[in-house]
Length: 308
Length: 319
Image 1 (cartoon, each protein chain N blue to C red):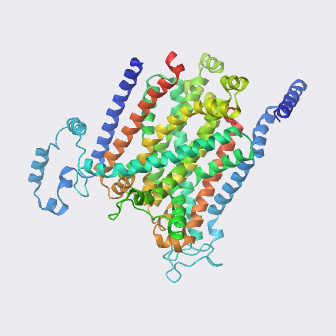
Image 2 (image 1 turned 45 degrees about the vertical axis):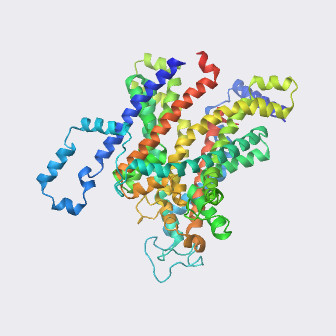
Image 3 (image 1 turned 135 degrees about the vertical axis):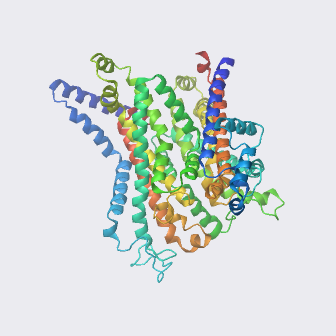
């Protein structure tokens, strides 16, 4: 088995060498290879499909359901799933299916917003700190250590008590608590990149530090950061759900995945109202799983050293 | 070695100072001060402003920020953590009640996740590329993706409500005299927490084991003609245990704080539950002190682990 793999690998190298000699090797082909690798990763493709399906369903919520997620209908409370209400209705007669779709919009927005914000700040600060070194590096490194010493949920809850609960605050808190890991990754990558010759030559040309750092070096460090962003999106969606489940996340009047589950904590609902919590839980799990598969797939395609 | 420890300690102290400073600053930012905590709002409204100012002055609330900070730090070092806003009890006494419960839960969960995780990681590394390995990898991602509380809800529904094997939640009941009764309450939360953590440990130990299997001394052991199980277990697994133990060491303090969700679902009266209640009730002193203690534990753990790895790994010592 090992032998055949090796033979296949050798043939591949031969083909590449031939192409190089013939002058037909192009940059585009390399990019295609990453794409092809991604396409060959079955789990990542399934993840991408599930991810797209859930995001599209949430975006086109008004087309898929005619119920408003927030209007109660006291004439039909606690109805089990039927043709009229696919996932039934909750305690005050709101359609659970439409709550899941509209709630998904908020949950995904919070998770994605938090992850993107954290990555932007982490990458911007981290790459400059790694490139420049000196006092800026020392201070930001200590700062990130400080933030990362807290257990994530504890820090988030602590900040929630100080600034209060709202959607905007939760996103800001996620950014504040999440930038550290991206910062460290970007910084570590830049530390090794800055020894490269092209950086030395750019410096010799007299380009400004900002230009070298962000325009010429950052693109070479970006792929692990993208993987990290995907994985932290998954983490933040789980965290939002947990926070809202505890009643400490997004205010309860806004439908989110966590808030839907928040209303199902009592044993009666758990035992007799499965439609109120089981579908949401499955949707959260599927969505987070799909992001994790995509993230793992991206890492395998972009970082050969992480395979195995 | 002594120099290393000293250097590490010197890094530790400013970190703790900055932390306590931040926590104190956060306490200052939260609304209300000692006077409004001590009196109820009605009495406060009736009290003339001059008298309020006099009390503030006598309590030292008008001192400069840094003076109050160092006073507070001194009290903290002397073991006075302040008082709970809701019950008026000293925070120290409250911690004394909740810490044992959390320790019990965390240690149980840690044992489950460490044993299950490293065993599964070992299997998956040894059978690399097999169906079992792939299945375990996928199961690992699924395990990382299911929200802890959702998993807890499913388990409560299954084992407590439908089958009736285990209690729904709680810890100590007044009628319980034997430890076995008590143990029944522990099983469900510990398993849920432990299983949900297993996926992470498994991924980690698989990577550690794969890393070890590529080392030269494994080839040497094999070429000596040792039986395969001996190579894998004694020569391979034992070495790859070191990073796993380091990971576990890091997990314990995080766990004590991180079990907020599990403790609330199972009504487990531990630190996490107390923290959640304090956050909900805006009980600022309790929130900040618990957070501070948790961070301190993480910092101390990382200090100890740094020293431990230094002792365990001779290559670090040589440099």
